[in-house]
Image (tube, rainbow, N blue to C red; front, side, top):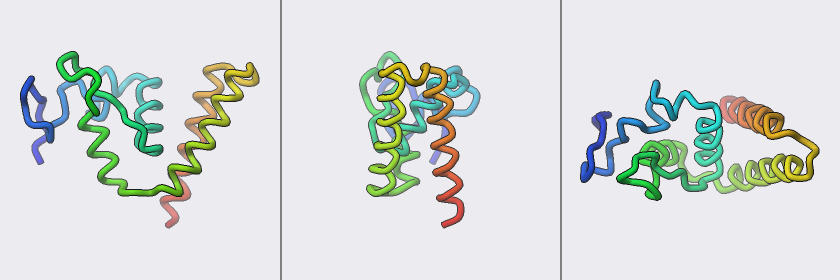
Length: 118
């Protein structure tokens, strides 16, 4: 599949030029955006496109990442609970936003290590 910038009206199989799932784009270099993108891939939650003409539509890079992972409902449920607990702690003031992000990254890394051993 070609990996070229999508223009308005282009095939939805192409990622946008500014896609968060395209290495080197401002969105892919943002730690916050990368975290949200990873959480969305792992949880199955929809990650939306950053392009103005596709605002609100599912991101094609996210769709490709989810397709590559395949259905994993047990993993998604486990991660959803872990992230829910992390952000509940943040809302109760037990963690700062930065701490919640750091703990989330650790949870993602832990899960990646588990998956690599399978």
